[in-house]
Image 1 (spheres, rainbow, N blue to C red):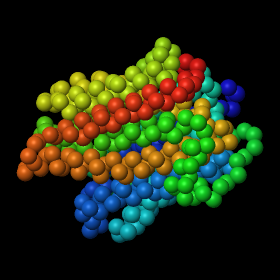
Image 2 (image 1 turned 120 degrees about the vertical axis):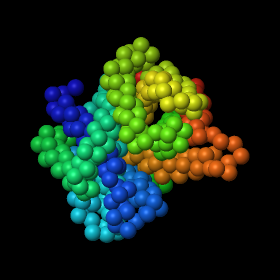
Image 3 (image 1 turned 45 degrees about the vertical axis):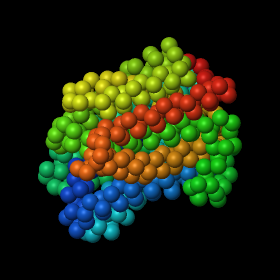
Image 4 (image 1 turned 90 degrees about the horizontal axis):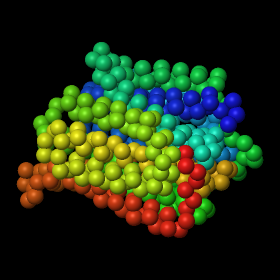
Length: 403
């Protein structure tokens, strides 16, 4: 790897950390801010869905644009747009302005696919999974810092966390302007108009043998994650009587375990097992962890189950590495953008289905009370992803060099 690449990888790491801090920092204050602007719970749900919908619409196009014009301008543009969206949210006088701000934020967040394409550009088969593991650690670190920072700042003003997020995004833009090299090498890919149509843009996955099945594995695993995260607080509150502080502590512990898995365990596991066997082991452990979550009758049991469930995070980076290895360099952005669109779709559908299941099985009139139903469903989704991956492996998807 050339000496010009490490600053780029550092920028991607910082970008992903700031993206997740920016998301997490507003979590403690958004419900109250929506209420101040004459919104209700339905408005809050629409606001969350709008962010994911904007990502769904923008991710494929941004990925294709990065193939044509380079990763650097798209990533820098995303950082600048994120700063603008947080500033607009901080100043929003009405609910409509807040919706516009979050839509712009969703478009800025859609550059995650471009960041993944950048990682694929600067990586080799020997270090690709490790690099994606650093990206996973960045997500975990941001989710740890964000909500805690948001709670501290929100105590001094509901709009202060948005101002802090805007400042972080602006600093990230300036940092990238100084240090981020372009990762695209060779001939730029032509920009196809179909990249502007989300569902049609997914067709790029079909151009490369094995990619549709690998994408299906990722979608099923992502849905399982959405089922878990969207009902976690509801489950803790209803089943164990936890308050906001306790729920926040569990999320912090989960985030710390996630960072430890990505940074400390993943390189060792990959060296021993390689990509494919690491993915299989991670899916099995993730399914077992969700099953234990659903069965946990007392709060301390949930903490014990985290030790198993957190190991499911070992599978994401090697899966990303396999996907990146199957795509041609000139289509890497389009592929990662399409995957980003699929992930955004999961973020829309998953919480809707999971919360509906939870509400049905915890309602006072429910014929069968099952507060852990979303975790059981997540476990089944992971087993389905394992079945699809086994089919993929049987069709001789190369596992690459052990990382």
